Amino acid sequence: MAIFPRIKLEKTLQVDDKTRLDGTKSYKSKDEAAITAVEIDPGDGAGYIDVYNADSDNWFLDYQYASAGDKTVQIRVTTDGSPTNVSTTLTVVTAAADYLFSNDADLVTHEPDILKWVTDGRDSFLNLHRRSQELIMAFLDEKGLTDSSGDRLTKAAIIDIEETRQWSTFLCLRLIFEGLSNAIDDIYSEKAKRYEKLEQQARNRFILRIDLDGDGDAEVGEGFLLSNVRIRRM
Image 1 (tube, rainbow, N blue to C red):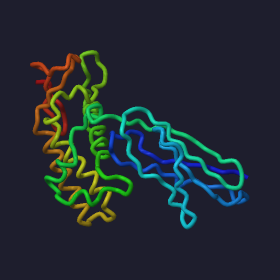
Image 2 (cartoon, helix red, strand yellow):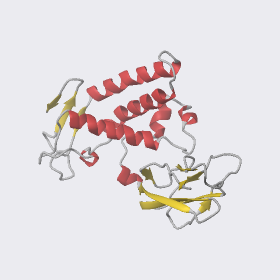
Image 3 (tube, helix red, strand yellow):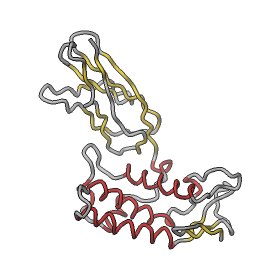
């Protein structure tokens, strides 16, 4: 007999951003007694909260955190004996520490009803703005950009996020519509292709001033022209 608690969550979350702590993949072996309780502890002092539903296995907790820090999220599942629990860590950051290059207001400028597509358990696209930032930094890394010590650039090296705002906005919109698309030629696929073109244009159009020496300022000579094929030191 065995019980297998499972918890799915975002690895990084911004303060006051809604998230879903999802235990729906928890299960038991066939020879185990029926599940009678599923509880999730979000790790911020609230303690265990019962999310069990006898009529379905939609065992989740929608939640948001008021403070930054690492949160130890736990789930425990009970049948007819002692509960079995597992834990994992979620990192909550402030908006300043997150330092995202775009936000939902930027998306709404281009797609006024875009927020209706936010996934269940969330109330923003901050997760995709964060993914856009990761992809932008990965692009710069692939192009061989490093700081003055030869280390990979961090997001803090982007002194003025206004220079990456359009790039990040269009990249985020592309990710959203790619996720909605379920056919090669549906309307969402077409929107994704359109925003991919705008993303490339935005990426190529700007001279990106980067703090290469870590002094907090983008000085003369610390700029790059982005293009599809190369980056040129200015």
